[in-house]
Image (cartoon, rainbow, N blue to C red):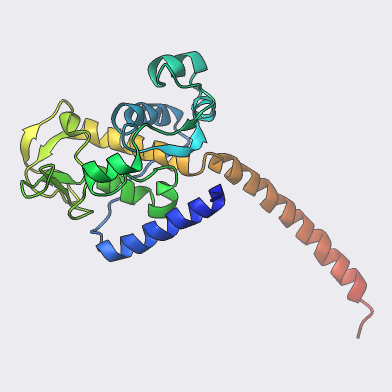
Length: 235
């Protein structure tokens, strides 16, 4: 199966499953992919907390290092496993069989999650974990009910005693190493990184788009003048 077919299938499955799950309310992430420092912090969070289960298999490490202005030697030293070439695709060692055994389903690749779900969905999911002893990992999620994954950043956030709402977590079952504001900023950074991953060229696309619109505006003037000249003698 070629790459394009795989992308289409992932998007279709995600959209269908999203409708079936009946997700809760989402809250704005207010991320900004122009903020390189935020992207760098988000990349660090991803590699520290997410890469063990979730791949980014449609991207390469060296492209991410270049776009995020991280020197390759520092990227290899702090973010990349010693046995991985920096030109590799961003896959992980978790097999589909083990993923299904541990979580009930294979953890999804996250390269396109921002394109399929949107950044507000990602941010709300990341900040929506709360204590639920009835679940296998002792947590549930306010956005994604009966979620199969554990709270990967529970040590940083702590664990909400009840489902958080628009104002965030009001009571903690236990606290983490970060304050609520620090954790919220961290999840914006992680959301920002996943937004970049979904379309690494989006800033360039937007920049080129302004030039295209400017060209079309100038062309419109000449097209209108030509139209007037050609039709001036037509009664």
